[in-house]
Amino acid sequence: MKILITGICGFVGSTLARALRETHPRWQIVGIDNFIRPGSETNRAPLTKLGVKVFRGDIRFARDLAKLPAVDWVIDAAANPSVLAGVDGQTSSRELVDHNLGGTINVLEFCKAHRAGFILLSTSRVYSIPPLAALKVKTVEKAFRPVLIKTVPGLSASGLSESFSTAPPVSLYGATKLASEAMALEYGATFSFPVWINRCGVLAGAGQFGRADQGIFAYWLNAWLRQRPLKYIGFDGKGSQVRDCLHPRDLLSLLERQMASDGKGKARVQNVSGGAKSAMSLAQLSDWCAARFGPHEVASEAAPRPFDIPWMVLDSALAKRQWNWQPQTPMPEILEEIAAHAEKNPRWLEISAPR
Image 1 (cartoon, rainbow, N blue to C red):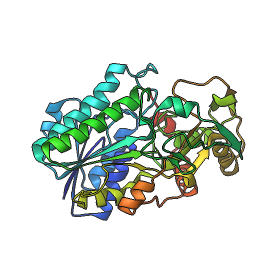
Image 2: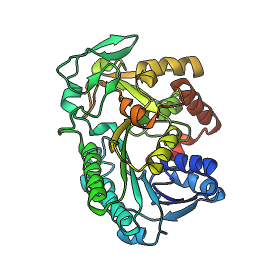
Image 3: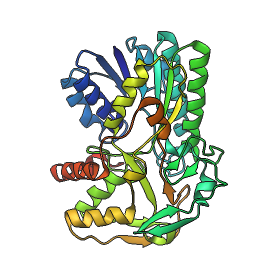
């Protein structure tokens, strides 16, 4: 088996590459990365040492993909993963679309040329913002919980299912991923190659780059340990907003099953997350940090930011039914892994934060 991972030196791409190499030592793993993300270069040498061939290139440019070898499957882990991308002054809206949509189309053309299967790592942020922002919640043990309303399709105590609305607005970031999903399904149907789309919740673990907008759990722990400024933003500034999290290595068993499947009778799009069992508010995360590292003051700002929502938990029941998949790494283990990495890497925020 030959596999190409785009964005291979990012947190998710590198984690999957290591897991695949460990589990399938005879498979050929190659990857492409443009190394524009601070911290990504730190993953290059370790992957090369494991026998993973890493190409420097940018999926926005078809010529860079043309130099890659033919493969059986592509796992697309390359993206600007911030919901604030295109509006935060770090990247332009054009750059975001070029990265997340134009790059995906180039990869799909690569799959078409080589008859390769395609797996897109998508996001929970394809779900519609207005009904989520308007969601009625109550606070239980410092965390928001939705007040369930039967008239909201796709919403339950287990989280959002795939039937929840994806109507705009979903943010520019969410729109590029939703458009990428549609293009992937169209390419697969038109040119007869397999396509799977996995909508992931917040991905977290040791080695995640130090950005609050891309990896809030890793950022919060690293900043707390270093006594860096932290702030609860929006929702009365109490930190009650909730996210679930998933370790990317838990994706491996799902990807293996998808690559081995003939696809008959299976939905092509599924949620993949830690779910309600792996959900936590920022206030609860602060309590965990205080117990692990000691006290630290967190500032408060009541005014919300664009695209903020109080509660985002994905229901992965479909993935469990059709793939017999469920996450294996519990939240406490993920947090402890991040904490241990933070202690061993005192300059991690400087290495991996935006310059």
